[in-house]
Image (cartoon, rainbow, N blue to C red; front, side, top):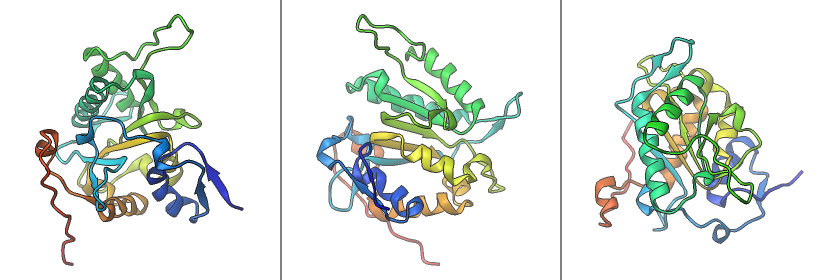
Length: 233
């Protein structure tokens, strides 16, 4: 049976469609219905010269840490996520248009703590029209059925053993990658993620579709893209 989705930019739905839906998912909206959020330097270049609405930030220096409640957190990823949220808010995105998710409750706690210290609203503030202004931070499981303009995901796990824990559940991965309407940013440790077949497939898909850009030069508006090249086996 043919399925049609009306939430995601077609580029966001591309990988989940191929990986989880057997290419049976069709798009009920066009790319023009989901304009790319600013700032543009957050989003990598596609090989056709446009900007991708799917981004991966490699937190190679990050290290996972066990919490007292037997969960995991990764402060390096927290800092990256908060920096991204600041950039999005400074460029005009509303707090309620941003969702921050992680598979680990320990990371959700760490994210909320750091966001609060950065004066980013995570406590609901009621407006006169009855709506609330808040950057929602929650677990992947709690976000099922929800949607935001931009989703930032912290994958947390970073170790030399290749242990991915909750990330190995492809259903969680599918939920995480399909909550965003206009843009999804994944923050993670690539060497650890590659130990899981689904995440390895996503990283390969991402590499095949994007061009590597020096973030510092991109932020200054300099165009000096460098095509990604595969290492010979």
